[in-house]
Image (cartoon, rainbow over all chains, first blue to last red; front, side, top):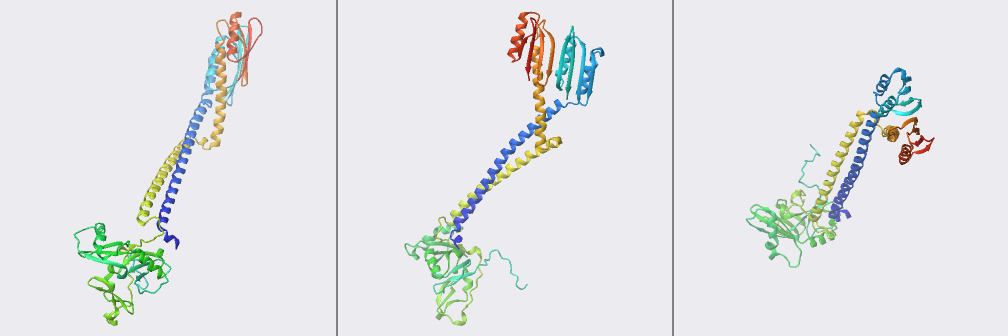
Amino acid sequence: MIWKRYRNELMVLVASLFLIIGYIYKNIEVSKLYDTKSEVSKSIDDISDIVALQKQWDGKKIKGKLEKIKRNISSDNIKSFNIKSRKMEAIFKNLTAKQMNRIFIKIENLAVQIILIKVTKNGDTYKMEVKSKW
Amino acid sequence: MKGQRDLNFTETSRPLILVHRGMDRIYESGSINIMLSPQFYTMKREELPIKYQYQVKKLASSVLESLLVDGVEYQYYVYKDGADWVFIAYDPSEIAEFLMDRGIKIENISKLFFAQNYLDKFNTPLELSPRELLATIDSTAVILPSSLIGEKMTNRVFNQKVSNRDGITFGFNNNSILNYKESIIISSILAIFAVMFIVEGISYRGQISSMEDEVALLLSKHSSLQSKYSRDNIAKKYRKIDKIERAKRDLLKDLSNLFSKGVELEQLSLTSRGFSTTLKAPNENTLLKIKSGAKRKGFKTSRVDDTLIKIEGKL
């Protein structure tokens, strides 16, 4: 049989194949490692990002903070103030520039989506309409 | 128990062919071992104060020098027999030629044995042919004419039992580029590298699974983010909100920067698409300042009258 005649070479050939297989296996694992590293890093970044964004824009305490605005304004200045299913619609009237400015800052600093802010001046006072959701 | 064979890992199960000049042509296609009769080797016994076989083997050519033919490439085999070292020289080419002539394929030969190493087999002379016997005389295997010993004193059955340990690799494969030793060394080096690569690969695999575990642990804390699809959708939704809302707040900040002493807000409308506002300036200079400030921010401006300016912009 011919393989017996070349058994020394065959032995080296088998060892070479083993080496090649080992090398390919290692390279596949290296490539997988790089892919996994980048995927894992992206996943961790995404998750952290999403969690941070969710925490910011899906705040559970928004309703309470908006109600605080209502409490801090005299009822004479509130034409309407409704909070319903994560939406707020409010109309303020007869506001001084200072009061209007304070409401502005509070809304601006809350993590709500501003749908509308409308301000009109009537004489020395302001009428302000705010629509937001979260 | 009948038919049951004893397990003996040193004993070889391959057929053992006794090679002698008078042998007939044989037809063995499988793997075989061969035992050389004294016709194919030169032997000398020496008492030497040397302990190791590899050291003795180096002396083989000089010990046997006077008995060998010049110009022949001999190979040597040595073994210890009691207090003596036994030196054997054989000519692989001559043996190969003879075996091929007798129908034995070189590549079928597994191990090579010497009759000298198995003297017990020939204590009772073994009949090689009607004219020749293989016998043990003075601890040496020799070929004798049959006429010297009576027929009743001879043995016709060759005991094929040999131990693998005593055999040597048949090293006259002329087709091989590499000899056995070289190929073992090269193969071992290659195999070591292969094992190193595999071990390295396995360690990378371990790192991959620990990283995957890390992500799985993180995801288990946020079950709604388990699938990449839902993660992407949630991220898209919140990034969009974040971008728009930040833009609105930046816009309000830019507008507030347009205010200076005496400037009043007349009207403001801010939606998700953009804004429009009207400001009242106390004098022309302030109005021009507001106008240039708004233009710097890329807003559209238009004068309503001498004191009022309308500013518009998109998100």
